[in-house]
Image (cartoon, rainbow, N blue to C red; front, side, top):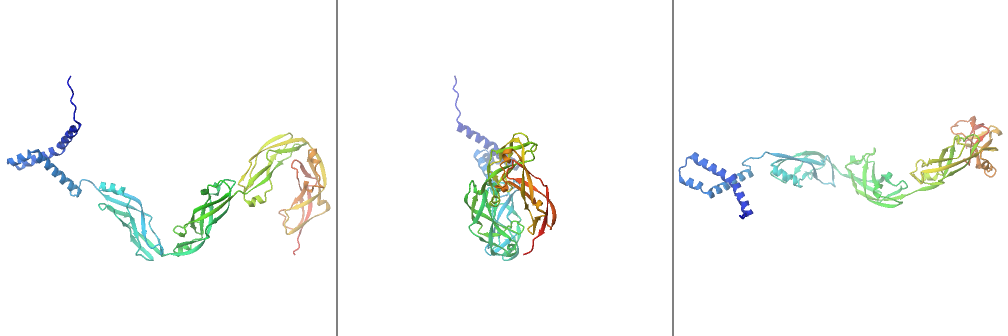
Length: 462
């Protein structure tokens, strides 16, 4: 068997490189040299001997390559077109005496258009040192048109700024003290049982600075306390630092460009959970079937805790759930929602099961119930037209065991008869309806007399 010889990889690489140089550089240069020789009709053997030497052609090729590189690099030969890029929203650095002046009309950013060679533009895009400056150091109070300055980090590129100049107004800076107020936001993000009861700031006054006309538009400066940043999960006292301050005009619009000293404050926020536990009262609505009466009403929830502001809780005595008993003649179970009182944030129970048991109806009359007055205008007094108009007889219907428990002698509030004089704003004699209620909602109360006659009299001025 013949042994197959291994090929040296290094020799193979250099062999391929030599062929490429010969094809791309030496052969074309040789052809050009022989072409020039033929055209000039040189008969001298010296030229032939030089051209036939490989080293001469190699040196000549390297010389031509160097010349081409130098020509392109120094733009002696134009082999590429001019390109352009736009650097957008570049910040502007403004230089002026901020303690003495306020400047209106300052640009926040500019666009820079760069033109030149492509590889210079690629380099420019990677640089972060594109600085645009507006130098107002030598300008005083007044209106001025000033050119923007660009540091041009790559000097082989041309540039254009947009805008290239701006018109600014320089004002003298003034300052004044302002009382700080508080605006609490995102309170709806708190748990329903929690409420912001107090907010205290570490200072009451701050200083605002600008030119006089702008300061005159400031109606208030508010510390914006965002309770959502507290992550409050329970009643406690929390501290919130770096609370932002914002100036507002009389329409509640934010005023930009007002310098506020200090820029932020620290707030101490007290979170509380005001609540009150009150009984759940079940009120039947409608009339049960004739001959039937409500013997008992039992509820799975007897009391609820209401979470609300102190002002609402102060007058809250009970939470009412109404059930429709119209035409009811037999026992029934009601599944009812518990609606939180108007203005309350939360309630401990939202549903209740109410069981109503029914028995046969009985009735009993209670005589001599004194008629009370409600809703009378304080400018007047009222009196019954006769003795018969001051008292009524009330018929109470229900199960016998409940009716027999009524004792108006020892419990005068067990039955209440009254007239509502709301809306009566003139003196005179009137026929008004009589209303009757009782302390036990399982019973029904009816007055034998539906209307009475009363006299409204103006009070004597003291």
